[in-house]
Length: 323
Image (cartoon, rainbow, N blue to C red):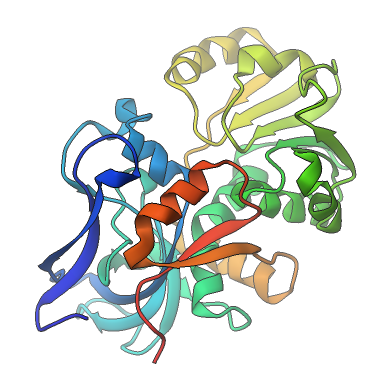
C-alpha cells in the first residue's frame, strides 16, 4: 500500500538471474507542469526486461545500478501538471516508456503526453497493460519501418509469443501471407490467430528456404541479417526485435551495398500511434493473449516464467487491485 509520499517499486540490484529483483519503498514521483502522474494498476513482463536485467544489452543501457524495470503500464490519472491539456484526474489510461530505461514495475509513474493514451474501452486494465510495447512495436514495424508490397510474404520467428502474436494479427489484417515459427505445441494456437504456414523450429531449419520472404521479422532476436538474408526476396527486409551490437554496426554497410535491407526497429512511445493501436483493438483487429497474471510481489517467478521462452502471448503483472 502507498502511504503519503511513499510507494513500492521493483529494483534490480545486480546484473544476473531473477534473484537480483527486490521490492523497495521509495518516494512517489513529483510531476512538473508538463507531466502526468499515473496510479499504475497493471504492467507486463517483456523479454527486453529480463535481457536488461541479465546485462544482455549493456551496450545500450550502460551498467548503472540499482535500476528499475518495466515499459508497459495501465492505470488511472492521479494528477496533471498545469500545462497538460488532454488528460484529467480519473482518466483510465495506458502507455509505455523506453524499455531500456524502464520503471513501470511501480505504484506510480510520471509520464508526458506523448507516452500515454486513453485505455481501449473493450480491454480491462490487465489486458491493456500487455499491449503498449508489443502493439507499438508491431504498428511501427508495419506502418513506419518497412515498405512491403501488397500480399507480401512474411516470416515471423516466434509467432506465438508477445510480439509475434500481435504481428500475426496485424499482418493478416493487411492481407499478408504469414509463415510462423513456433513449437509443435503452439502450432494450433498460431493457426487460430491466422498463421498460414507453420515451421516447427524443433524439426525444421527456419533458414532453409531461399529467396522466399518479403519480410523476415525475428520477434525473438535469435538470428542475424547475415544468417537470414538468403531467405529474402531481392528487395526483402530483415528486422530483429532487439538488434545485436554486430547488427547495429554492420547494418549501414549492408544497406549501402545490398538491395536486401537490414532495418532497425527502435520502438518509440508515441501518443498518436497509441491511439491508432487503440482503434485496432476496439475494432477487434488485435486482441492480446495472456498466459498468466502474477502479482508484483511474485516478480521473480514472473521473470523466470518469461525466460523459459515458451510463453504464449504475454505475462501480466498486477501492481494493485482495481477498486
